[in-house]
Image 1 (cartoon, helix red, strand yellow):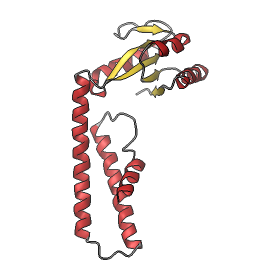
Image 2 (tube, helix red, strand yellow; image 1 turned 120 degrees about the horizontal axis):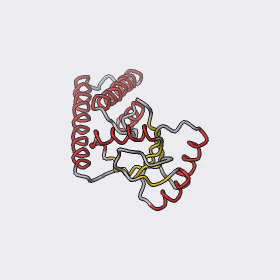
Image 3 (tube, one colour; image 1 turned 45 degrees about the vertical axis):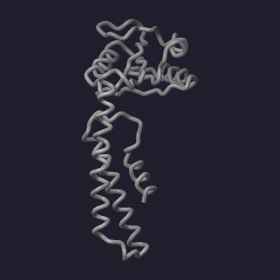
Image 4 (cartoon, one colour; image 1 turned 60 degrees about the vertical axis):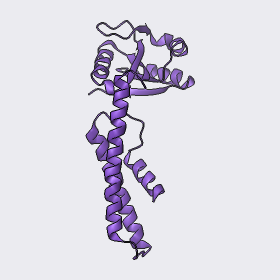
Length: 185
């Protein structure tokens, strides 16, 4: 049952590394995993002809799993938000892209401090105006920037040139950095 639970939750996307910005999306994924688990479990009971398993016990188990899963996610969300707002457990991000899109992304992250994004700096053709993170240079300086700064993840916003994007990803991959592409909203 534990293996089925883990597998169902993985298929439903509960364990993905992306940040859940919205509680409803997180709960929806949990419920998808629980429904999938229920379907597979009941199908196995039927196919294996396990008639001595109490249906009441199954209903109680799935009810407890649902309540426990949602409650544990709420507690984890609360604790991580609290840590992020206190400046602890920050992810260190380097933002790469064009001026307007960098500004929009930085402002979005500022309005969602619970994400815990500690922006190390900005990499762009020129220093963007009106944002706080330090401009560290251009993409040609990227290998040195990644070597000289503590960067956990690189977020690319607004880079439309496939060759430049490939170069950014290649440099980051060489240094073992996760690259995320920020999509326009």
